[in-house]
Each structure stands twice: as structure tokens, then as C-alpha cells.
Length: 154
Image (cartoon, rainbow, N blue to C red; front, side, top):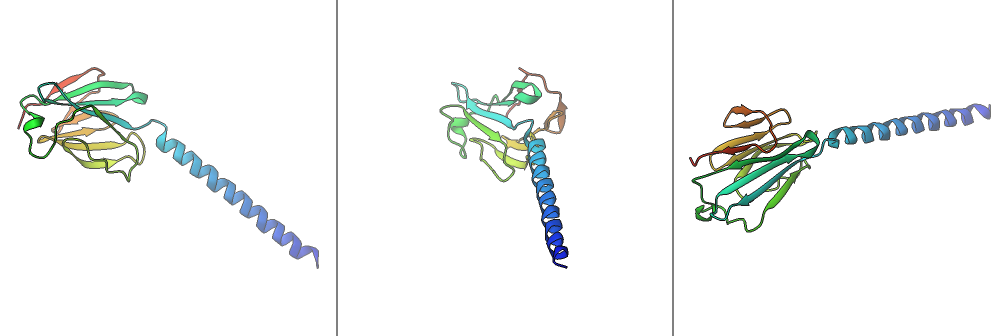
């Protein structure tokens, strides 16, 4: 009779150990799967004339140097934003982080599984970053590194 309660506790501890190991392994695998491709890296800057430029990169997907230029929009004259003296790069990697860009605003942010989806309102233009495509004002543009899109003032 003394051996039965001892075996019971050994079995309970063994089951607990296996469950804990599976939980931590599953958690680690989920975190790895969530972050394996890295975040969107968006650089906000202005030209010497004060024209806003947004540069988009996602190195793991091979997306670099995609530029959105807003001719006819002068950031120094905008009442809601101050001029960007130096380029500011924002990495959208934490779903809880609602980092405010230097100009424009983030309308939607889902970075649960990176790179995720980021939607901006930039000077009246809706810009959506998706891993499969770039959507500007409801029109899809395939990702091409070095691409330059000019979005006129609205």
C-alpha cells in the first residue's frame, strides 16, 4: 500500500513535466513563427524643399528602397506636422506599439505575425503594406525594390 501513493505522485509529476515541456516548446515555436520574417521598416524624411518621402523596406521579403513621394505637399507648411530634420525609421514589430509616424497617421496595425499589415493615411492617400502587395488608394502595386511612386497632393 505504501508504493501506490508514491507511484501516483511520480505519475502526476511526470505528466506535469511533459505538459510543461510541450507548453514551452509550443510557445517558443509560435514566437519564432510570429517573428521569423521581421518587421516593416518605414523611413520618413523630407527633401531639401520640404517634400515628404516615405521609404519602405522589408529585408526578409527582399523589399528595399520603395519610395512614396508626395510632390505638391510641403511638410513645412503643414499645420499638423513639424519638418523632419533627419530621417526617422519606424520598425513596426510589436502589435501593442502604436508608434506615431512623423507625418501622417497609422490607421490600422496588425503585426501579430510579421511583417503583418500596416495601413497609413498619408496626406489624404491610403497606403497599405501587405507582404504580397502594396496598396495605394485601393489600387494594388506589386512590390519592386527601388520603385518610386509619386502621389500628388489632394
